Length: 214
Image (tube, rainbow, N blue to C red):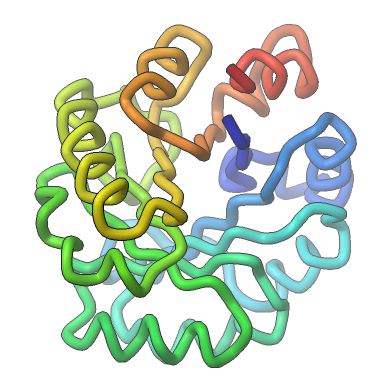
């Protein structure tokens, strides 16, 4: 299991310190949640803050767009050379075109499913994307509880993925912890995003990250 701590739960007054700390603690990716206050009812970070994260990080960035006007935000964050840029299928009118555009920038494209969106919604995109991110909370805020119904969706997605594009990774985001991680691993998850669990773990960052690497 690869672990991608979400910096949304970091101490933004000590962002440089926290980003360096999760990288030193053994994370695999640094997950960056970008929200525009329109697609989701929250406003997070822009390119100035992402620039600071990129400079502090010794692991690749994983940028998750929760926005309207996806192409505008892709152009905004592409200069930081993230490994992945993911966008929501619920918002994008031309997802295949955007996938091709992201790849043309040298970035691995990924598609996101909200909790209510079925796995089958991305079936036709599976040959073209490097990752599918399944939201296990409603996007917009950190610290929410895991929605258990998404586990069956992950299992259906894995069947589709294995048939169409076995190299495509499955990522989960929302309410992930050491209690549900083995179940998620068994369902087919390759990468977990964890914010509150990692940054607020009583025994520290390394203990939290290690507990997710099942």
